[in-house]
Amino acid sequence: MSDSIERDALNAILTASVKEQRSARRWGIFFKLLTFTYLFVILALMMGWVGGQQSESASADAHVAVVNLQGAISSDSDASSALILQGLSNAFEDKNTKAVILRANSPGGSPVQSGMMYDEIARLKKKHPKIPFYVVVEDVCASGCYYAAVSADKIFADKASIVGSIGVLMDGFGFTGTMEKLGVERRLITAGANKGFLDPFSPQSEEQKQKAVTMLAEVHQQFINVVKQGRGKRLVQDNPDLFSGLVWSGESALKLGLIDALGSVDSVARDVVKVDNVVDFTPQPTYADRLARQLGVAVATTLGAKMEWQLK
Image (cartoon, rainbow, N blue to C red; front, side, top):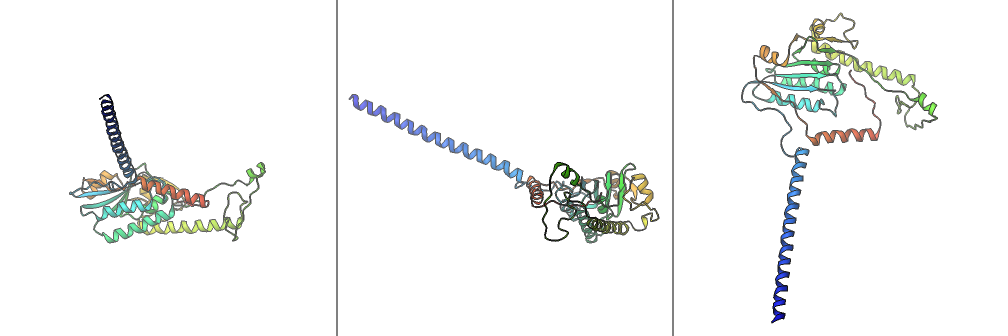
């Protein structure tokens, strides 16, 4: 009798233990799944798998579409031609858009990116001839930014805005003297006489320097041609400093024909377009986009040093 009672008690204990283990295992699986789901949602938000990339506020009413060009223009920034043109394309395509404004606040940057903006804006204007395109300058619209801006039907700025800088530069450093003092020897092996073009760790070659000057002059002339084409007879052509790289205040830029009038986004929408409703079409890059651009820059830097010239 005693043995039977002990066996029953032992069976009860073992059964309870098994049930407890099963319950603990089920709760463990549940919490693991919950944690995995939480992490997946966070990752999806960061990578942009959930939600769109556009920041545009859909409006069923007539509106002025605005795209912000903010910061230095380069392929790996929020002022890249890809992002700006995406916003402008969406703005032009919207059926309720009455005018498109590029709100410019940039010191310039890549001539390639600026040229791509200019060419594509010209295409969008030709495709949508009934939608006027304006540029409104805030603090600064210099060099590459102005390159893109001259595609506008009209350019507006504040009287204290900085406008112009129609020039090109290529900058860098030379370390040969420092290396000699430190006893460091540069060992550069190339296939091709100019493969080490303007290498900062090698003595400067006069021949390569002249090639760089020629190349800069070519890009500068492209810039001048675009400005003349975009501004036409509005420019004061007899000013010898117009294409020298100088900048002017908005007030002086108006006298030189670099801009058309003084104004802001709100005043242009209200007084020129006659529409008070302003809608932001500036694309907002996802975390994945930013990460991809950063990885691209890192890879390019690792594979080889980059030489860049800029419209500044």
